[in-house]
Image (cartoon, rainbow, N blue to C red):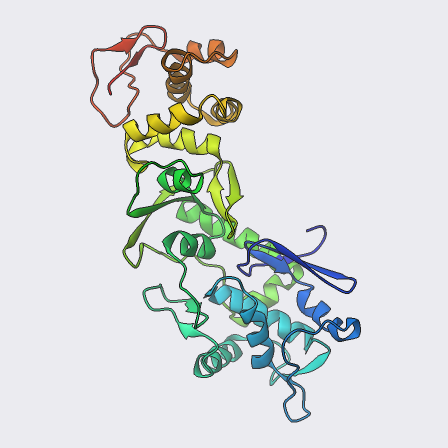
Length: 353
């Protein structure tokens, strides 16, 4: 977003032009200038929602928050989102050309607590039952499922393994679990602080000192009947955004590599191979690129065998990969099954299906 500093507010990618102004939303950020630009809307004749004054003394902050929250495409709101939105309103002190009626010059923990209580009493937000503490809901909307909820509250996660197969339209069986990949806790906390630095810039110290909510991880083990399986990776894999909600999903090549590494999280090796057989020729370059970049020796041996001997698909990369084969070892095609005395001579791999 150029030189703009962004702060999280969970929205799908969209761009909305207002006169000469243009606001960009993505899955975890909104331009910090959005609230400042709201003041110009009246000049361009593009006001949205009610212009609410409070007895001539200025716009009530609850009215501004209500307008902003109602524009979110998802009903799930984190405390960090709300804290950031409140902080920006206090900083600009205006909204859509209206002076805001504020009790204090800057937002702090006491103001945040009081305003959240008022938002709940007014029915603008409700406490999110079945969700961890720190998450709020916009009432009157359909609650997001486990996959959407997990991606909304964790800016560093993406759908992977069986859930990624489903999002790519490749899963041939259903799973009661949602599979996501994210960062380990220590790495996650460092990434969260880096994100807050990006969001707040020079205002970071003031925000932290005020006691407003920080970006924290929310543990979502289950939403309704769906359980969430979380895989931790020190380095996140290649991902794309899919569907109307633009959810983060491992790319097709990344998905195939992940599933071959952990077939138990993708419906089992038989299911994984059925999918691989269906997509290998069309997506050969994408799969080979990811394995070249991220694959270990055993990853290259497994994928090389599948392409070359199982599917009879050739590629120059396989001559490099075959040097990873180890004679006299006990490498297996299916990492979850026992060794079998049937193997590929070229790839030194037990075909233990």
